[in-house]
Image (cartoon, rainbow, N blue to C red; front, top):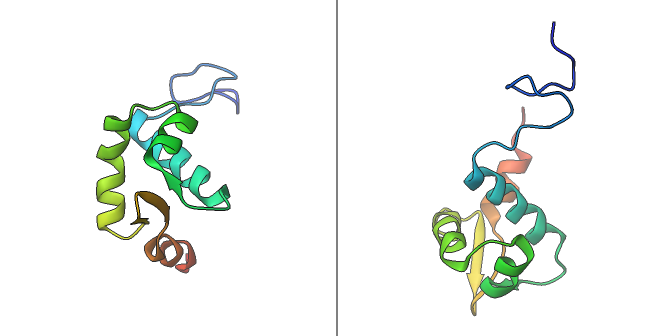
Length: 89
């Protein structure tokens, strides 16, 4: 039986990182949610240590679907993320 700390590869003590894009999206949501103001692409890129072009690939569909909003070259949480969070389980 595997230790409770084991990840899917069986490595003890190291959590699974998952796909890089998913990890970046989750970090992006955390960062934007904790910010007290909208953030620019440059700020997001720097804070997440992610190239701007890679980040744009993630930001575009998130803004198109309303999970993030873009205004004057800044990003903030959109209405869809709140609807998603409030859905009953």
